[in-house]
Image (tube, rainbow, N blue to C red; front, side, top):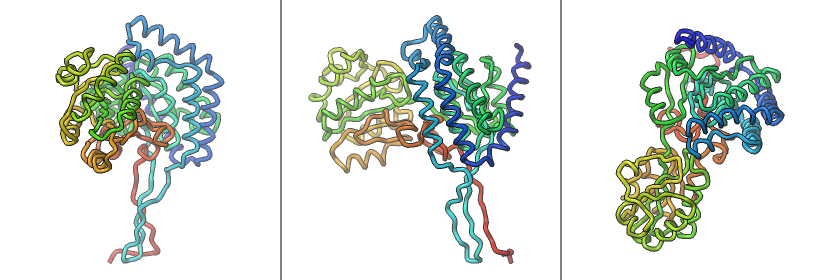
Length: 421
């Protein structure tokens, strides 16, 4: 297939999406909710077909030498398909933000000025590895009144193809405009470039994946981009921490699912508790198969630890590897996180309320937790149903992006015949 052929395919997707978006924007919530429930039912009814397609992707991934963590991100089984369906049902139960009028104020002349939430129109999502993004993104875009063009990674092409097809078919049967959810059918990189040049057709681009992908999208796009950079997430164990709690949280944050963006990649420990805490957490982590890369103080207290480089402290490993360092105080921990982190999710373990509040105020990240695992940094866990991703931007949306973050707003004015003098 030539680059010109690929461009024509993407342009056709764009035309169909714009037509669908015009109808989606004014659909009643009940219609959108009925469609989401139909999609969820279709997923569960088609589980064997989805798993068969996913097995093709897993086989190709093994042949290409994908890591165990990457294969885990790619894998779909009955439980995960059920979880995707449940997430769609949760989105259906959420309040619909479209058409909400808020921040209404009455001016001295009697006019009332406020804002109304409206869909963006057509959203392009470029992502890698995880086929559940297809379901989450499709559900959230439909509920927020947006048509979506999905461009998944080559490693999940068979899984993404069937998921997108099932969503569009079930949605159309339930009353959605046809082509509300579309997948770019080619893995050709030229499709990404074509999408990024479709200003006036696609209204917003959301990339999810490695830093190189996101930097390329930001560099080439002629369309506004909301970025989802690395998840170099930290857990900081403060001087006043309950060390049993700290151990439980660190093990969960690092080991429960190491290949996701909200897994802990870095551990910081206050020097006052380092001698007590590091040997015990080191033993636990090593027993769980985690490689520890630490500074001199960490290596002195954990014999199995390897010396860390500066780059190790900046790395999102997405695997059973963690960097670690000892810091002299809370201020040093905050400064360390702001220097080495990726502004995604950070956690402090402390019994000192003042320290917790200083950490919340001082850490410059999208999500900041007190005495809770970084793994809670997730749309579903935050009550958003599911998420498009976790934005590390500061404009428009920051943190998990749910329904509200997939809308923009317009000013509305309600008057009773007023004219400007």
